[in-house]
Length: 317
Ligand code: UDP
Image (cartoon, rainbow, N blue to C red):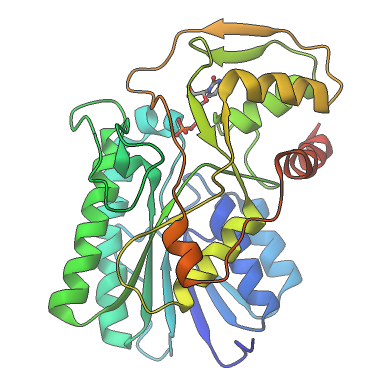
């Protein structure tokens, strides 16, 4: 695959998933322009990409306010990956989350129309809320509490999907939509608040593992390299409707804690805390649509992925 003559604009490039997506296309020879305001992205990721890839250009900006002047720049693909996504962000920066997924996404879509660039919106499994259908299929409309603590993200992403489809129908934008399920891997922030960084770092320090509720709630964890392959598969497909992307291997949170203690040879004990409000009880992507239309298959299993992630966190200790 040759992307040497392609330019890809990645909003949120200093974030965890977008940083890996940027690296994937940089390795294929694309010119990548990364945008980030560092609200949750890190300077370390931006610097790592700048240091290792001469074909990477970074611009610090907040896409809520508008985009840099690209009038003389050819842009072939625009990836809308700029949104805080951890539940601890929902209470801290709700306005920024609502605005980046509405005003920010609209700015990117307008640019996509102007440049005739293919546009990809990174939506989320959160559009299904606390799902009553399991596993979640794309045709399920979801069960979201519009006035709950997660609504700033869930509803903003539902709006971003609607905006994307309407730009496709009414403004001729060439769009793709992905719904990303739980993803983990190297370069996650250790203080990100999500279950895998919390559990791995607690296990590495022999601290109590903080299981919220009884731990019977489930998640399906996808290693970041598999996720990047899925994003690429959807970007290259011809389908404008949403695709679930992730790894359908499902674990309860308690099981995840127990497996990590064993895998990392930790002396940590499990300690239970209150379950956050509206915490989804079960989550697993049905990825049959993606698998029937592309050759995507997740290949990194739980043990291998968790080991690689733990190796990364060890370098920070
Ligand atoms: N969780 C937990 N302990 C933690 C962090 C998270 O038990 O230290 C639980 C959380 O309540 C949820 C699941 O792990 O049921 C996944 O949470 P995360 O914040 O990673 O993302 P979510 O899938 O809820 O968006």
